[in-house]
Image 1 (tube, one colour):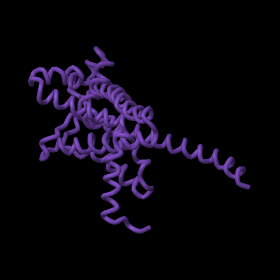
Image 2 (image 1 turned 90 degrees about the vertical axis):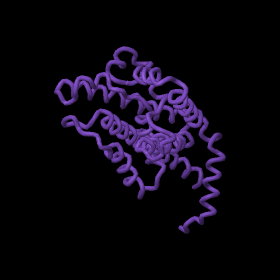
Image 3 (image 1 turned 120 degrees about the vertical axis):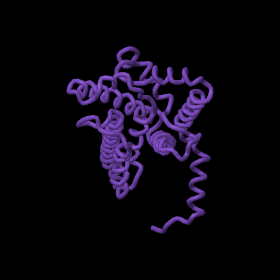
Image 4 (image 1 turned 30 degrees about the horizontal axis):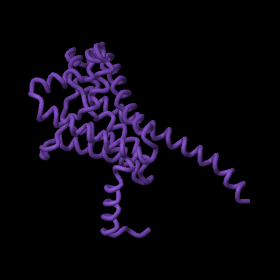
Length: 242
């Protein structure tokens, strides 16, 4: 197969940008909400009110016990990162979660599988990983692996859903690229300089790894379903063309 010329690559990229609103409207609206929410919290609210909002929507144990639905869904409307401080590690996280995870991988899932399934991938990763992580925290607290104040730790944002979308997008890659991509998805949450409080990493790292596992599982289920449909359609095609 001949390599594409730079002009062909530029044309494909331009076509992808121009057709993005039509092919991925749900993702585009979600990204718009995230950017508006980020500007509102970072620029328009006072620091005290912004901190109070972040504390209220955090999906820590206390909030999940007190107002679980509000915390789960509101936390997915903000992202914990920066759009302007490009020299910071936070901007790198923004590129991975908002840029790759949502803008690219979730948009691909919407184009390939439709809006409802894409939303299910995002929310399944966000809610599923959050709840499983909460169970891990409870077990860790019982064994003394985490400090008690982890119950009130701030934890909000899109990263769990984005991580699931990153893992799910393994299906979009050629076979030779899937293993390196999967290694990247698993490795980047472990690349920080946070210390392990015990036999487990910090709970956000646990959440990201669980999100990736959910994304890979969903990708595997989608691949199996597609394979079964192809096998079911093969006899009908053969009968139609003897």
